[in-house]
Image (cartoon, rainbow, N blue to C red; front, top):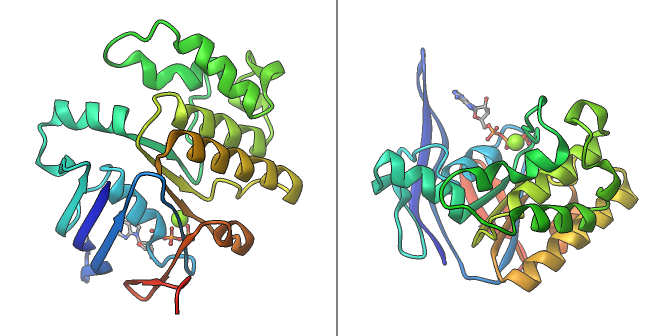
Length: 224
Ligand SMILES: Nc1ncnc2c1ncn2[C@@H]1O[C@H](COP(=O)(O)OP(=O)(O)OP(=O)(O)O)[C@@H](O)[C@H]1O
Ligand SMILES: [Mg+2]
């Protein structure tokens, strides 16, 4: 369960604090799938960074299954991010010197060994249609293929929270539909909390819970 209470986020700038999000409250249960749309620069990625414990909030609280990641020690926080959160970044952030298979395995290199990690990575890559690209480096992939590697990497630890920033942003419509279906399928099977940020209205509409970031507020738009 993801619970966000009165969250605010501002960045310091030379002209004073720049408020991006304020007084934001949100609650999502395992199995929930939610989308967030909103104009470029409205703070969607910023919100995901805070929810994924990559950026601290300026005010308010975030808890995942009762744990406030910002109250943890730095070591515990690293474990929390590694185990509890899968993140598909807007610009995928794959390691250029590692192969596709190695990139997917990176989250499993921290902490206790998972004997079946390589097999699971192959399964996930097979699932996203990249079984014959395991030894490619990110530079030898298309943008959409990199996005799919990023999706497999986010899922390798079976995290209870899956945050996706424009997961189909680099894809044509057919490939985007394939990735989206995969995402919803995995979400359905693993009962994660899924939160998707996107400019793609059709993708956003596939989520039962829909939000729009308007100004610095998050408004529910799927119910009257
Ligand atoms: N480190 C930072 N310092 C100051 N301002 C920042 C910082 N990071 C982001 N911003 C500002 O915060 C605002 C929100 O950025 P964010 O990346 O969250 O937008 P977004 O909704 O994801 O946009 P897009 O749809 O273009 O990806 C932007 O106006 C950006 O300039
Ligand atoms: Mg963004």
